[in-house]
Length: 110
Image 1 (cartoon, rainbow, N blue to C red):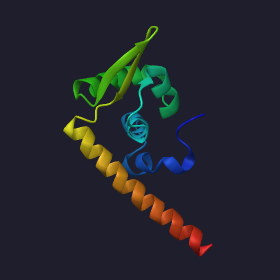
Image 2: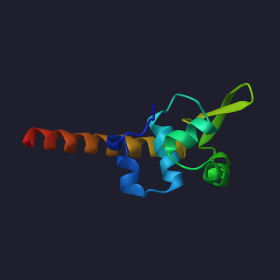
Image 3: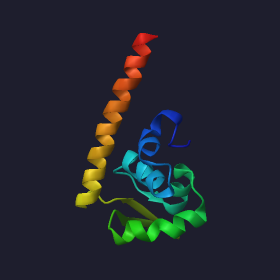
Image 4: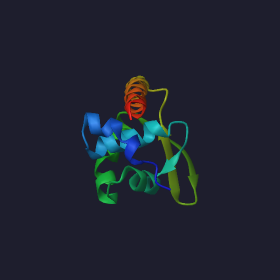
């Protein structure tokens, strides 16, 4: 099951449909869970080579942290101790609230 359904893409629709934003949208939406790079690639709808090209930005900024290994797969999660990640989560939550209010208002009109 893919994480990003049409109604869940409000973050990337507003901030830009770039690979970095897509990965952030997935990690923030699934905060508290850990994922392999393959999971992130598949659910962010970006290519493997693209993720490997940008992943060092996430690691260098400490937006993600390694949680554990399963076999040879390394799992990562959003680093909720990082102040930047905390602010991104707040932004995501505000945008989600606005998106939900707008969607509900449109359904009431119909």
